[in-house]
Image (cartoon, rainbow, N blue to C red; front, side, top):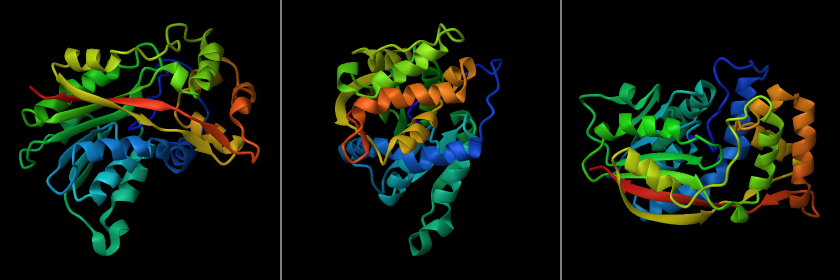
Length: 285
């Protein structure tokens, strides 16, 4: 789910969904993205992100994590290759005029890969973040490894690189809802099945990228929604249910996700799903 809870996993050669990508990006930025704010805050506090930070945000999406770093005075670059509609919203959020009298310099947004952010005039980054959690779909860390390989040459030696993953399924209420997507999509995408996060997922990614693990933490990130309609919009905005919609149809997915949300509805109609996410701090050699 990066930027983003997860990347969209439909193959370019797979079925084309008839969705309003602009509306989906707005649902992401207005509903779903904020669910990871406690994680962003915990990481920034631990690493003392501030005026001396030069941050490279991988998969920056609609830019909420970048906005929080900018409010701390950090210089930052966000890169996003897979969701141009989200990146357009990030540009609106981080445009100088949006800051009024608090306008800041040192903010760059790049439509592309980390290599496209390389600039001889830009100092090496002293923090790299990849806030998109892995550990939800089989193989969902493969793209992250490629991003890290392209990003680490742009960072200082010893700079922290932050990776994020889902916590154990018994501590993530949303896991039961995500299984719906896998079950419905199985006839179409048998290889893209749901699997529980494993203890050493993040360490394995870091080691494959040549990074040195140097500490970790867990953060509670409950998913709270005003109602079932809001929960549906938020969850579908992640892209996790696209394969299920292609394999069945929108009405079927809406129906089954609504049923899966029923145990998490409270008396006042709100939806509340406790979750735990894990982050790893690794260092550039």
